[in-house]
Length: 232
Image 1 (cartoon, rainbow, N blue to C red):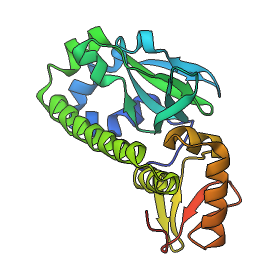
Image 2: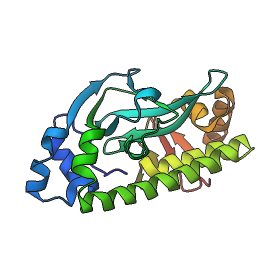
Image 3: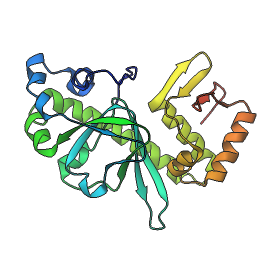
Image 4: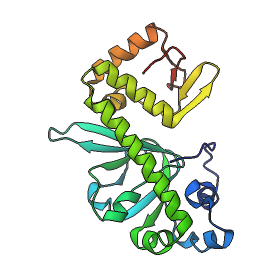
């Protein structure tokens, strides 16, 4: 779950957190009573934000930057399970069942997060009916995303996987303008390959063909523009 707020590294973390759907239903008094549970941390590109072993201890909120949840298969290949950016939450489901998540989280760029411990999550968030309702909405969103990724990974056709992935990321991290939909998350060919479980060479070949056919455009800032003719 996220909100479309321009990224501003100078914004106070607590002000931003209060604007999120998860907390916006709280009164000023209720929110002030929570401020002490927010722990801020900054990570740089390539830093590990969260390990699989520690995933059941904390919930994270991205204040700015981007992170990716990754899983290594038995052969040591990395698969991207999700990308989280400003306003996104992760780690909340493992706090409920106490089980670890089968993924580590790595910073894709300079990133600031706010961390909430399991103890504070249980004591201050689960006890609030409004927050609990927002938590259910968040879980529904997570379930839909899981269904979408299952659809991507079970498709045997590599191009269909890449198309479905681009459409999925655009739906979650897309900005519409007169040209189409710009994917605001910068992804390398290797990132797309890891996300869709195909080789980097295959991704390069597919993207080159989509550019040639006029379905996508690689912009100057390396973001991907999905044109109206793009059909995933």
